[in-house]
Image 1: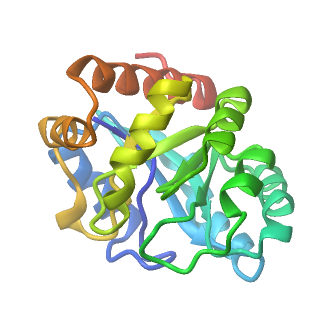
Image 2: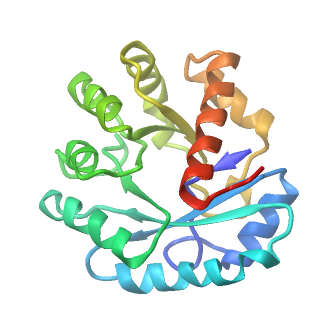
Length: 219
C-alpha cells in the first residue's frame, strides 16, 4: 500500500506523525506521505515540523515516510507561488486541495495547481477535460480518494483520466486512524470508481516509481 495524502496534528489530523506512521505500518503500508494542510499563513510552520522526519527516517523500519504538504483553499492567484515556495522549503512533493464537490473550493484551483506544477491534485471533483489533458501533459497525478464525500466524484475523475491518459493515484486523505486502509480495500475503491484490477496495479506501480524518484527509494 502506498498513500501520499495524509494529515497529522500539524494541521487537522488526529495523530502525531510517529503514531500515524506506526498505524500505517501495521495496516501494511510500505510508503506513507504526510501532507498537512497549508496556505500562506502557516506553510513554514507546517513544513518545518514534517521536515524533522527527514532527519530521523532511519528510525522508521519497514516503512518509508515522505514529507510533503497540501496547499489548501488558497486563493487561486497564490497557488503557483506557494507550490514553488514549498519546494524551496524542502518538501519532497506538493499536493493541492482540488475542487471537491463537497467544499466551496475556489473555481480555477484545479487549473492553477496543474499549471503551477503540483505533483498531486487531490480530489479534483468535476474536473474538466481540458484540465485533465493539461495534467497529462504536465505529469500531475489526479487523485482517486477513499475519503467520504470527496470520493463522490471518483468515477468522473477515473473515466476522464483513463480516456485521456492522465496519471491516477489512489490516496486516503487520512485524518484519523480509522481512515487508513489496507491494499485490498484500496483496490475496492478503485473498482468502485470504474477502474480495473490492472488499472489499480498500474496506479500502485506509478506511485512507487514516483516515490523512488523523489526520495531515492531503493526497494
